[in-house]
Length: 258
Ligand SMILES: NC(=O)c1ccc[n+]([C@@H]2O[C@H](COP(=O)([O-])OP(=O)(O)OC[C@H]3O[C@@H](n4cnc5c(N)ncnc54)[C@H](OP(=O)(O)O)[C@@H]3O)[C@@H](O)[C@H]2O)c1
Image (cartoon, rainbow, N blue to C red; front, side, top):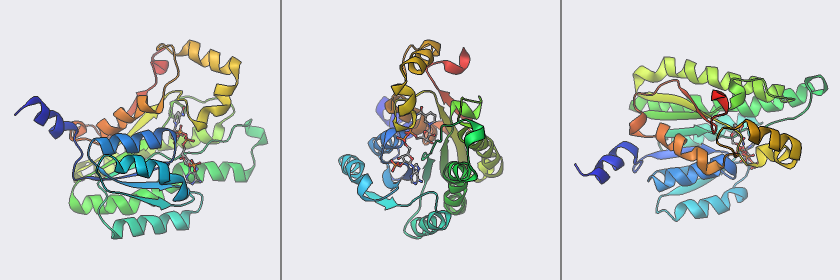
């Protein structure tokens, strides 16, 4: 076998269909592009179809098939309906639960609605989407689920309590799903990005003091980009990660090791 054949066998995704949530921007956009470059067909999920037009165009340039689905992840009935309709219209082999929302304020000033919105998008919607899709994966005996966790799956963070609680839950859910589904041919893992330049962190990037403080603590000496994360997601979606189960892979420029 040539090196190129070995690489394709371990990391290629041709013939697989991957669904990526939050595909319009940031890490989700970079991940959709990376998976398409590895050969996967794509189902892009975003708040609305119009917002996905740019990434749909980019992804289709890699010669894979792509379709876009719009849904507001705070509306769990609609999320469940999308999951059912996606499953009915073809198999999903790879699910990347990337979409996420953050609310920055001291805990005492958070309302119940703030709390529920974050938990709904970051946790409940993951369940609504994953269970019907995983059922199909289990029937076929093959599937990859990658959840996007956070450094705040391990640490407390500052003024982002609902986000921290949701991301701790995502790390736990990743391990719980892996415990139930590993023997059925499904790999469930998570990627925990460090500080990445996206809309999610725009207020921190705009705060010169916080931004410099964060940069000083990162051994790599810089914030990450979405392209620093998508390779780790693609790895977990690949045959190369076939014996990786229930792992939360930190990709953070060394932050957690410090
Ligand atoms: N950036 C970081 O430093 C960092 C670190 C750790 C973990 N993460 C995680 O990485 C993931 C991706 O975030 P990102 O950094 O790439 O930021 P981002 O560019 O803001 O991406 C978040 C995505 O989630 C989608 N989304 C949020 N609420 C939604 C809703 N109610 N309905 C439908 N879609 C919704 C957004 O859609 P719209 O574009 O339409 O708003 C957006 O595409 C998130 O889970 C985040 O928590 C990020």
